Length: 160
Ligand code: PNS
Image 1 (cartoon, rainbow, N blue to C red):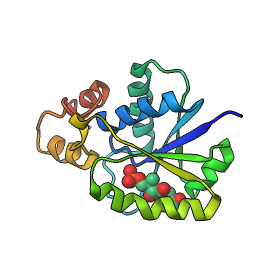
Image 2 (cartoon, rainbow, N blue to C red; image 1 turned 90 degrees about the vertical axis):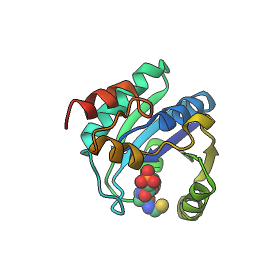
Image 3 (tube, rainbow, N blue to C red; image 1 turned 60 degrees about the vertical axis):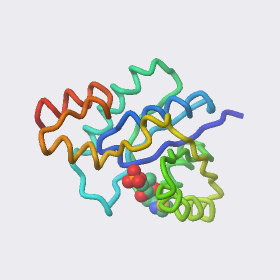
Image 4 (cartoon, protein in one colour; image 1 turned 30 degrees about the horizontal axis):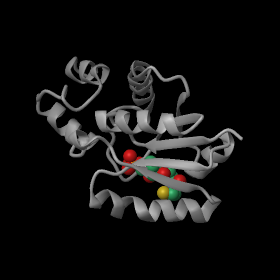
């Protein structure tokens, strides 16, 4: 049986913390879907199509073959999982705050469809990196290269 997992998120934009978790997860599963999901609780900087494009470029640089990049705006994330035959979600955990944020989502996704969530720790050097921090630094003209794949830095620093 193929082990298919999904890494969902806003990815607005994808960071080096995300790519670190994606690279680790790609080694654990036969097929890994990185899925951009609209989160109505967050004010988005980048359109979903641009986020997908940047993820595709960043993931190509990882040199792994088993990753699919997609977006999902049709409702529950578990319905995407069911469509592609995935039964595992993967989330990155940086701090205790992430555990507090992620635990209810993991419970709900398990209750809805029996989907388990696996938590992976990124490289400690990325543990303070977040998309919101990148958006803020970028909007104020700072250098985001330490925090994001080079395609993302080029895009943000080239102007939106
Ligand atoms: O990167 P984010 O914004 O923290 O990701 C949150 C996201 C998009 C994964 C979460 O909001 C989500 O799964 N939304 C899809 C809607 C859904 O299925 N909700 C019920 C379970 S949380």
